[in-house]
Amino acid sequence: MTTTEKLSIHGQWATRYAEKLDLAIYPIRPRDKRALHRGWTQDATSDLATVAEWWRVNPHANIGVLLGKCDMVAIDVDTEVMDLWRELVAEMKEEHGVDLEATWVAETPGGGLHVFYRANGIAYASERMRGIVVKAGNQGMVLAPSVHPDTGTR
Image (cartoon, rainbow, N blue to C red; front, side, top):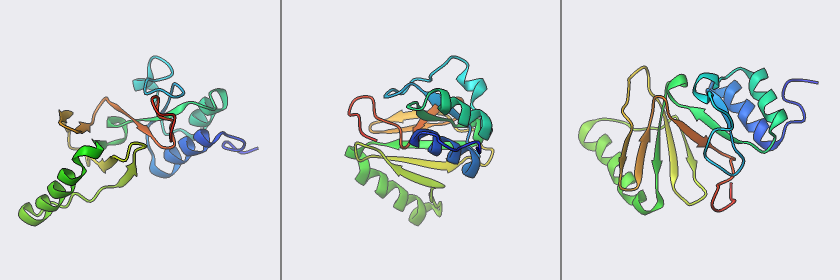
């Protein structure tokens, strides 16, 4: 049996994130946004065997990524500010020559976006503004196909 055989759908995705994208993964309580155990900031890893074992023991755990440990920045964009987000991205490119092309984008269950970028070694401060949250450093982000705590959707 290989490391990832017979894993739940969450376990399969968690191991893919670790193996293919080299993300620092950790388990989150099922239908929650909180880590499954203390020490998650130290334990988050891209080690395939470790990640697979976590989901063998906790097959329904949601999936988290520790952003700073894998040099990522994430922006959580709520549905109500989607037009503003698109305008900002277009303006940054047209007026300032900054291309905000994401490493990858995931749609949230509520219709918003999680936009992920490689930080390229630059330290970013976490910020919150109306409908947009920038996360970086020692912060985690929930990854698909995790189950939303309020709606039960993926």
